[in-house]
Length: 472
Image 1 (tube, rainbow, N blue to C red):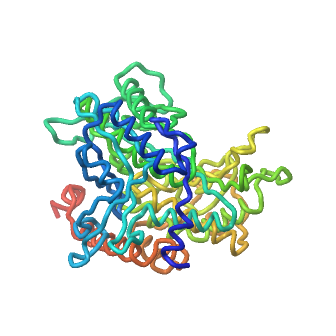
Image 2 (image 1 turned 135 degrees about the vertical axis):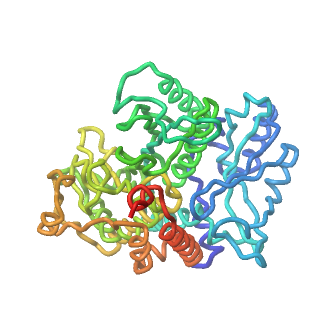
């Protein structure tokens, strides 16, 4: 399929939740949508517009323009130098432009407090010839969703992001948890109010929050928002991380999504609930199956288990990620699936009668340092590989996998997740399914960045090494 034809295929309007209540009737009429946005801009007193996208590693990038330039930005796009962005272009081919996704327009709530109201658009990246840029992570996810649509499916995700709030000391980050709470603790400390304020900001941004609570470790929190199609959900995930950091900064705290910021306590995961819908029906549900999973769901699970090593390179992309994926801290270690088994890599929540639409599989290994566009893209690609090749998963494991030793795991033919980033990258390099999903540009840029990161890590002398070996 040609790039231009493919772009037309993937331009279907996934419907995000919008804080500004953009009319559903206007979504397929760009003129009415633009008129509505300009009316909101005037009513809200917007002074600046932030145009946002992500690089290959998931770092959020943005350029800000005065509101007077908005019309030009919508009609003529915004050019920028891509050579300075991680994984984008070389210096001699640097010209690129941002195309505003009008459906992502929203007001940034914390900008009101500073008296300079700012609105935001999430953008797609294009090359000078008018084609989508193959190094844009958002485009990579769009391509996989278009692939699912050609098979008749829409991919829905619902991530659960954990994060820590740390104290600051004269601008230096100290690994000191902000509070002493534990899992689901009922308390009255400042952390409760911070979670509420983050939630208020998310609601203003159009993100439908469902629950907020303290997590297992001291200073660790979780705020869950409603599932949606994977593109909207990836947009919301990026927005969520920005909102958490902005509110934390207001209180003189530092919010981190680092997978394992403190040794000896639980790390932060990003469990992802997944389902495929065909029209309005959940394609994962089967009334006649013993745990209500359809053949499509089982194929999907089998595809993810088959490709897990390569997925891990994307879903757990840092050296630090693998310090979370160890036994004893509630993160998955072995490649297995099961019902209601929280030690499994893929968990199937128990079915509740009358809630067929909630049938899903929870993928528990990803962490919040990952680029959500790429993570969701490779998860979908692996699942579709299972469907297209009619793969069958191994038998579910319903015992506590956390307490398995390697000998028992071998007897049960249960594989181990990659032990470190280098192993995961090697798995990625050998996996055609995930390489094809990423595309040549992102595959090359990502692996180049991670090889450099691994070399830097290998040659760095840490404090632990000083403590352990200095007296030798």
